[in-house]
Image (cartoon, rainbow, N blue to C red; front, side, top):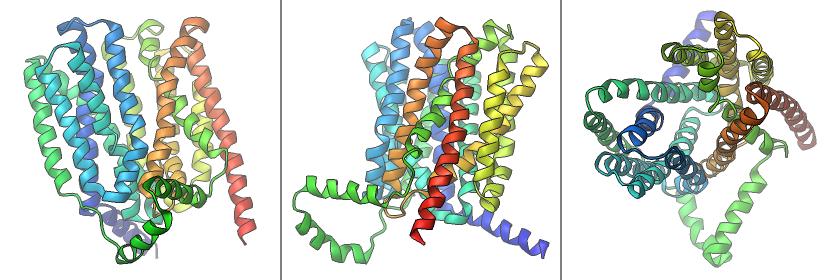
Length: 420
């Protein structure tokens, strides 16, 4: 009997790796590889040392990239629902390709800013398309596992991009840009092979009637989003929880390396190893935890993940022993490996099938706001309240998320009882 269960699990894993999902994951990996190489390594160093631009200009360029990415996720999700995956993803990777071309050939600040905006717009279809497409392909029983695989592709792409591109930069920037251009050409080819919009005969029969009944285009759009809002069966606490989850992470983004360098006095090699170690712990735990989420549900993984990460962050800056710091980083990695598949599986449960791309885009926009606001707040806390403050604030936000999740779970149970 146990052997039969294992065989079923293996079959489900292979089902997730159908050609459509593999193409989405390849696009995810290589686009994040290019994006990580540009944002983490090339743009800050190239703009500062080669082009001689100010830190203010560099900061605005990076901010515009992320704002462009975040602001276009909701409309891109709507386009995915209307026109399918191929054209939306193809448009996105072409914008990203143009951005890389501009950065490799132009040195004036207006061109650099234009390229940064195009990079943000180009990468905006990535998460709505990959998450909605992959969850649609695997069905309800495999959401936790496929979320783990998606985040594995993202983490490895973002992590390898800066490392690999550093090797090429040692030879020349032109060689590094040529590598990124070749990668994007390959990504464009993969995007062309994605399926287009699958037509539903029933939709074709009723489309004309609906259009006449609704009148103008504006009325149809309002009606469409009204239907989405009505179909969403989520607690009112769900929306602040979406923001808080990424806000807690955003609080750590600008200060983690700063803390390692100025407070712990780690060497550049030790800083890189610290980040790689935390990422490695998260990566090796993601898929096993995702499988367990599919089998046992999201509740206890979120409880454990939020509490473990919160307690670790609250204690993080009160230890200056390097071995202890590495142990705490491992706990944070385990905590987020619990949170990532469970949290995204919880979100996927709330999303109506017919408007999957639109709602994923809307939810990802709310989450993205946390990554925009978090670093700004963290910098202010560091300057005015000391190096403990951002880490303590992140821990407190995760404790609030623990409470939010309990309230959301209670609301969910109440609604189920009312439906019965």
